[in-house]
Length: 374
Image 1 (cartoon, one colour):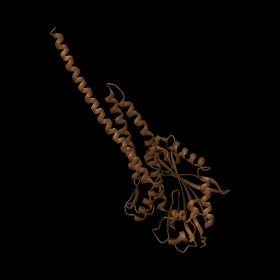
Image 2: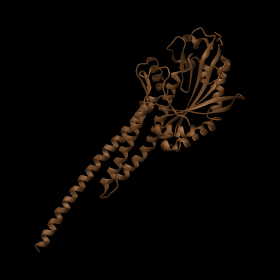
Image 3: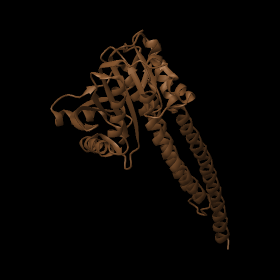
Image 4: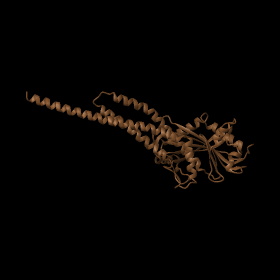
């Protein structure tokens, strides 16, 4: 069946890059820094269509509007709007938005892929690097332990507000071919691959649609704003931050094993202190990681909005956030067990040292008594 080719009267392509720039960000300090730099107040992120009691940010991120960018997309000069959201748990979520008005569907799909080619891992690396460097330099006083080698996550969204030539959004994925947009592929995909790409589809009204994949999404929203965009940003931010702590713990566990082994073989009267110091270090690590991961888990509070809750839960599952979270929890459990063992060992060593001190005192008293009677 030949696909109908509708016309996009009003839409956009949004390229996101989320960067872990610090352990945490002091958002109040960030607002003050931005006010001094831009001579205007920063905004706090909020979802526009959902009631605050239904869906809200745990700690609203700080929203900053940056200078527009001039981009060459398919040899055509375009102006893109640029923004960034700063999350308390250390993530800066950059977005570059390119308007895509009055395009046929094939041209709109080509525009989405062209934006990806322009801002992707190849030619777009310098653009994202410059944006991140700009924000890190400006916000440095508000950053707690800035990242030396920051991780990042990319996501691409095709957003359409006015679409002509479709009879129903319920069957939109059947009336037009979304697969080239969602996959970025120009070659025909197998039927199973096509079904996988189109599996995560969501609608709330009769005139909207959201289709999610691992690294792209298509959103049809006749209203000017879509909370689904914000939902996907938060889910990507959670994935990025959990990836950071997963890799941190991966690097920390071998060091922990080496320290435990070295401490265990240390033949020293101060072995108890060595065990206690190492136990405190591990406890501090567990406390810090647990505190941040709890902030990550509570980044978005979804209570009454069933539609956004479904989209959010599906995005988390699609991005494998629960899988990474469980990996972090397992590694934290190993460190907690090691802390408990070290604490018990330290207590045992202190007990042994106390017993030795008592024996030495008894011997000393006996020696003194013998010397006095000779």
